[in-house]
Amino acid sequence: MKPMRYLAGLVALAFSCGAVGAPLLVEGFEDVAALPASGWALINASTPPGSTGWFQGNPAFFAAPSGPPSSYIAANFNNAAFGGTVSNWLLTPQVLVANGESLQFSLRLLGEGLLDRVEVYVSDSGASTNLADFSLLAAFESHVDTGWRDYALLVSGLSEPADGRYAFRYVVDDTSINGNYIGIDSVSINAIPAPGTVALICLGAVALLGARRPRRQWLAAAGMATAALAAQAGTDGLMSFPHVQVQAQPVAPSAAGQGGFMAYKDPVTGQLTGPNPEQAALLLAAAARAPAPLFKQAPPAPRPSHGGISLMLDERQVRYAVARKASDGSITESCEPAAGERK
Picture 1 (cartoon, one colour):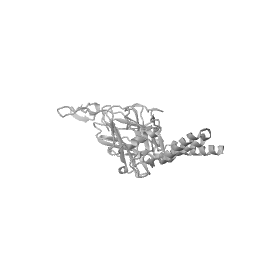
Picture 2: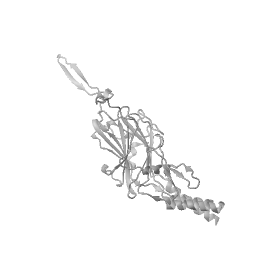
Picture 3: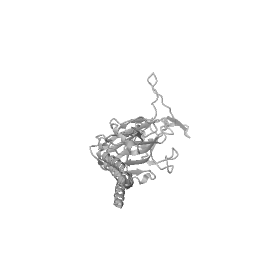
Picture 4: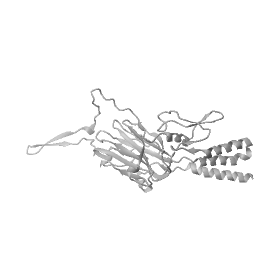
């Protein structure tokens, strides 16, 4: 009987760990040119279009947070012509989208006095590249260098799981006064395990350890499995468990993008236990999707009492005229664009 008990436990643990451990997508952007072949879609919908789209990270601006210095994907103000509007989209390959699923990524906005903005979207319309199919999850903007920051966003509000995509959108309203350079790295999509998977883990542990445990510990482990099976997912994607209290508290700004954490309170001892990454991500599902949260890294410049605004000018705003004297003594004059004008 004992060998059979161990075998049953190993089968249950192997099945459940396989369901928990495999992320749906992992991308480190070592080769941006190869993205379309792996299912990514790069769509520059800027007006009028500029000279760049998405491109390999440039270490001259900043290096990747890990790995080779250029191993991230970047975009800049040249996505649109000078004075135009940037709307540059980066769509992930098609994945299964479900409530409680987490999208994790690293983001850096260079700013340097010019407003950079990145928006994150989700679609449940399969492999569609129709931008109207995407719904806004969150937005991040800054006019100063944010440094690399890690974020985690949760999907909620879906009636049922569906095939779809996530998308990043670089946005600049007017490239004559806004927009600089942004980078994205370490994108991963992670599914939240179903309650039945949690139960399998508990039952597998019971089968493996039961031969050495007294009956009361068997009963405790069986109770854990029963509670996991009784867990229900609410309409907002946040699972609730019998005899479990979920608490949310603020965290430091450097933590995952939307703040807060999940803690589990033991009904017998009253002790709170620290969450694992999946449990911490679940807290974000309680936040409403609309309106999308805006993560500003710095406050806007104050407006003077006289109603004007201040703007630091650089070589991009400089224009000058050149006078040339011909051999016959005539003088011609021409206007030259600024040295940094965005072509």
